Amino acid sequence: MAKVAIVMGSTSDWPTMQQAALMLKEFGVEFDAKVVSAHRTPNLLVEFAETAEEQGYSVIIAGAGGAAHLPGMIAAHTHLPVFGCPVKSKALNGLDSLLSIVQMPKGVAVGTLAIGEAGAANAGLLAAQVVALQEPKVRDAIRAFRQQQTDTVMANGTLELD
Ligand code: RP5
Image (cartoon, rainbow, N blue to C red):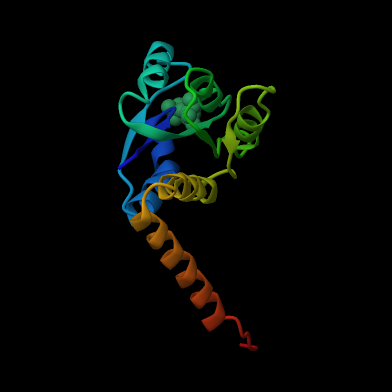
């Protein structure tokens, strides 16, 4: 089965980025999670991105905070789809991360998700949807997940005064 790589700029991003991992686990999609920093390990970034396909990855999820160059720099070194996750920064609540990731120049694509845990979870969901194109079991798991969400809303949709 196609694997997903989850990379992040720092171990401090893991509480956010593990939401992507949990989503992939739920759908039975194989993944590896590792720290690759655009600023602290720039050579590792290039090596990782250039060899990602031969390592068996079909999608890359990249999360970073602050001046978040990681997703864009990875996208510059691979043709695999890259989903960028802005991690909430201490100074600007992740707005800096979002703007760093989302505003890619024409010609190099990064699919940018929402700031924080919801975005990371949705990156996992999107990556699973890509894998599902070739994997009926993953497709069925995503369908079941969506149905369960719908059922939960339908079962709790009537509100009353306390
Ligand atoms: C970025 O700097 C990381 O992605 C992280 O979000 C942020 C802070 O990193 P630490 O100082 O916590 O290692 O590179």
